[in-house]
Length: 460
Image 1 (cartoon, rainbow, N blue to C red):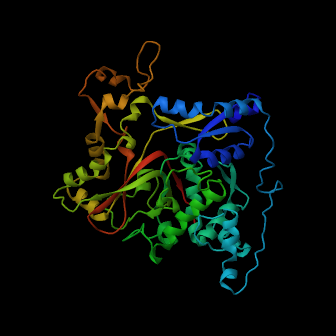
Image 2 (cartoon, rainbow, N blue to C red):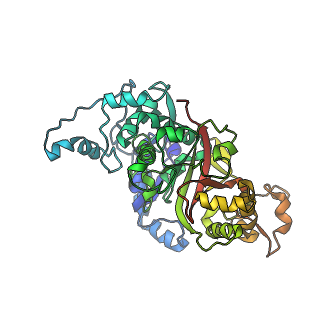
Image 3 (cartoon, one colour):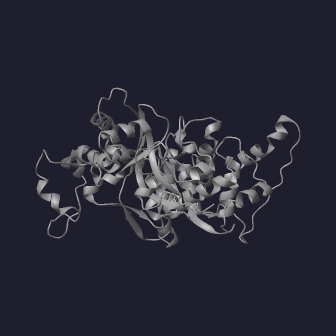
């Protein structure tokens, strides 16, 4: 749409009313703030064609006006000064209750917060945060969408201070940003989706203890013991809001939101896990530190108190898989892909990856029964299945000029078998078993939505 307008071809967008602010935010970020659009009352997703047609027909006059009227300028979109210098603001405070809260009021007026009081990011505190890394303050780590904000180390440090991070936690946040910068993370779709999804940060290695991340009881809950978990997860969200311009109701049109969008960060309980840590599965050494980021929705609670065997535990985990949005054999049509920045290039990635947060006691049950982590993943891969007919669905699968399946031709002969099934996910690794929390009979299951990335943490 924006590319057409820039090429001189008139275009008018049609957006649901709840997406109107999100649309304006996106075209601002794409440098075409006057691109015309009309609104209709409801989203078109899942609606009947005649209902959609009626909504659009009611806007025909507005569509014609948008195609035939030259847009007027809304004025320049403000942002970071063009010379790259960091703006410094002075906020006056006094001993009164209102005065003490002056900084947070200043930030709220500019929509520079997640809505919860923050630590004022004074130059001194930002300098102290920057001491937690060897990277230069103006190093660019990524371009954050949908606003195309330039995520420099300094900007990330400012948001880390606001979230309550300490300098020893800063490398974990930077590694998480490194993960998001990978094209296969598809972070643009994560940012602008109306779906309820958010990034979860999974930490492995010695940095977890050094940063004070809780990997025991209530590790994803509130409390002082979880201050590092909370601060790191919140800092990532503040970066997505303030650098990526993914603000509630504008850049972030998520239809209802999720409490998990305030931030999620957890470390593996490597001391109590009977298996090798997740980062070792990815090729790292045990003494190295790494961060993994996955975009997820959920979680769902796995109650395993009635289990009497390892198979009972695995069946309880598998019971959460039967949700159409959790993979549902879509891999048979080919890998998903993500657009690379503001280009026509796309990168393919397997997905989704589902983090299964196991308590140590659940992992021990499996290990004592002779299941390695890989064994458990393969069991889930083999036993979580879906009808091939359902997986193909109305969309069908890509075929070549001879009618042969482009992807997984070995399965084509099963297409006419009404009883044929395939695994819900393409590979066992997509069941991401992560051992953490207290020793109890519960586990959590997150539905992955896009890609996954693991990156090393800077040595400290």
